[in-house]
Amino acid sequence: MTIADFLVKDHNWVYAAAAVVSGTMLVWPLLGRRLSPMKDVGTQGATQLMNRDALILDVREAKEVADGRLPSAVHIPLSELDRRVGEIAKNTSRPVVAYCARGQRSRSAGGALAKAGFKDVYHLTGGLAAWRGAGLPVEK
Image 1 (cartoon, rainbow, N blue to C red):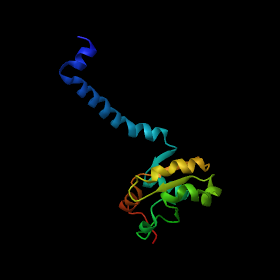
Image 2: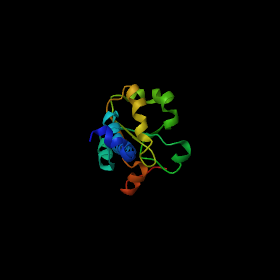
Image 3: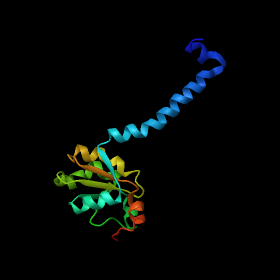
Image 4: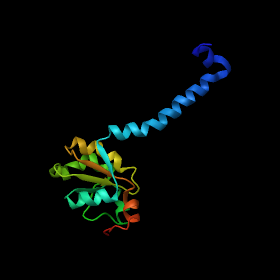
């Protein structure tokens, strides 16, 4: 039996297509992380970077900031980052740690930061929720 016979017989091609799609869905996040200009960093690593003068970038929306922020964080919402990245461009030689509420949106900041010349770019895994969960200080 050839592969074509197998795929045509009893609609096995549907199962083969489902296997390819599900496999792609499993591998895609791993590829995205490898191709991203950002590196993942946990709360301990972010603290170490802060101690080495990293720029902390809060990319949450304005209404979320009232909930508190990491110490000395600069707030530029992700929705405005492309046009406002010039406000922090003088800091391209410093490491930058971007964060949001839970860690999904901040990864998207990498492209704009890389275009602006930032080379040492990090994403806080778990965002502000992980920071708080580790018992670390938050400014109001």
